[in-house]
Amino acid sequence: QKEVEQDPGPLSVPEGAIVSLNCTYSNSAFQYFMWYRQYSRKGPELLMYTYSSGNKEDGRFTAQVDKSSKYISLFIRDSQPSDSATYLCAMTLSGNTPLVFGKGTRLSVIA
Amino acid sequence: GAGVSQTPSNKVTEKGKYVELRCDPISGHTALYWYRQSLGQGPEFLIYFQGTGAADDSGLPNDRFFAVRPEGSVSTLKIQRTERGDSAVYLCASRLGRDDSPLHFGNGTRLTVT
Image (cartoon, rainbow over all chains, first blue to last red; front, top):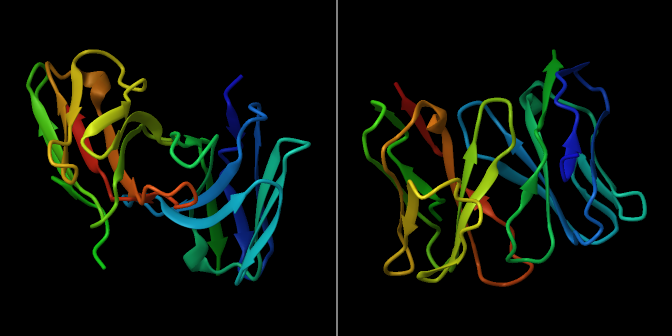
């Protein structure tokens, strides 16, 4: 079992839909949780950064962390074609320890 | 300000050759990381520097891989006797040394070993 599991998709949704992306993990010691967006032939770009459990909202994006279930989610409201990318979840034990990534979910938002 | 810069953006080399990949972190970022990303996979950790020293090199796959950061800024990832299985995108990332500071990535070097 990999430390971080993420469904690779692909996921295709119509413009304006609410998108739900999620990851599960096995190491209960993870404390910091991130979502990165990666466009083709580009590096990962940080979208959301959360410490421990709870919700965080930034514009159309909401990140949720449920440490009791070892489950994290990213919601995208009013999805746009420009949201089409691969979304990577990542997590780490402490600030300096290396991030562990999921495989990424490829999302297509169709106009 | 400028982000993490990686050069070259693409590198094609023959099996058995030596390659060097360069990373310029964001100014003031003391921590620097190298990751490798294969097609359809998430980035996998290789090595992490805090300042000039390698704080964790547990992700380096074997002794053909080596990285340096002699002045605590620019870093070079060196691969000896390249193999076709080394083909991947090599990503560099940097962050401030604070515990709550996030990681910022460059666009990577796409290495192809023929």
